[in-house]
Amino acid sequence: MLQVKALSLAELRERTSEKWREYPADVLPLFVAETDFPLAPAITEALQRAVEIGDTGYMASKTPLAAAFAGFASRRYGWEPDPARIRSTADVSMGIVEILRRVTQPGERVVVTPPVYPPFYDLVEEAGAEIERVPLRDTGTRWELDLDGIRAAFDDGATAILLCNPHNPTGTAHDRDSLAALAELAEEFGAAVVSDEIHAPLAQPGAGFTPFLAVSDAAQRVGYAVVSASKAFNLAGLKCALMVTADDETSAVVRGLPVEVEWRTGQFGLLAAVAAFSEESDPWLDGLLRTLDENRVLLEDLLAAHLPGARYRIPDAGYLAWIDLSALGWGDNPARRILRDAKVALHFGPAFGDEGAGHVRLNFGTSPEILTEAIERIAALVGR
Image (cartoon, rainbow, N blue to C red; front, side):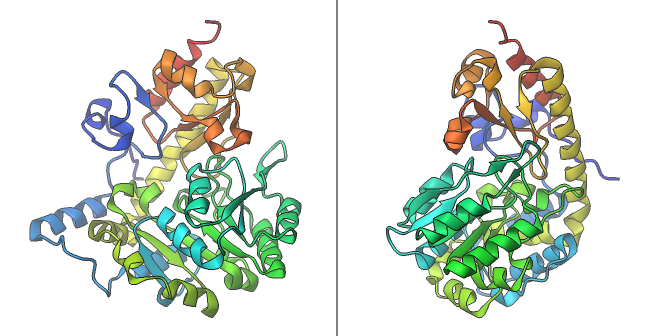
């Protein structure tokens, strides 16, 4: 059974990406969504071969990328997207903006469900629309879509919803029933659903993942999915994402995007994504999921032992933990004090919306040693 282990701290500090260059070397960086693991071997091989033969030109007009993703979706989710209805672009954010520009008019409102990935607010604005906030409902055991609130927003004129599935930062994998109900609402009010599914490959087997476009005929008619290998396989810098549709009208919208939207796909990103989505990478991804499962449980144990005032719900998917530190009395943005005094960089909770006051987002896609040291450093601040 493959076990994917994080690189050593010394090796990680040789990296030049955002995670390892934003802060001084005395800070443990657990903020941005990069992981500390080596690449899947198939990806390393594909990129090394491309360098060896100088395969660094423009992305071709015909590539195996769409078929590779369709095979991955079939194996991992039991979903059969049509490769003919898939186009690539540079990243998920770009795909979201380009689709929103075409399914909304300037000044129209787009529903977001905070606490949510902070760039969502900027992406809606970049597309020329305005934000309509309908927070997730906290049932006490999990977070879920507020379907009544979304209905009210659509009834009041909102024309689209930007869905995060699985949800960032809570790690919630929305269930089939709620997604189907959302699709029915969107169709009733003539609204579009743009589903960011970048964390989908990281759903734990026990939780599972339901692609929005797979839940119903209505979802196919109203929905657009934007997907990527970048979060699961740590490929964000290579620039490749996919826009997926399942209906003639929505497919026409994506086909109608300017050709440059697709040409912005990175050649190395495309090669890496094809390798990531191949069957050859499945054992590596399964090994990564086992490692993340161990880390999400380890984090629960560490918090219970060292920060019993923290509230943390084990996520269904991903490697991001949403932690409520309100009981510690460190203010609305406790990550500021933690960075200053504990030298641990976490994502600022309020950046995710008003619901993030008193919260932090922690990236546990790292080694048990780094995770343990980070929590011990933070715990040392209690009572100081």
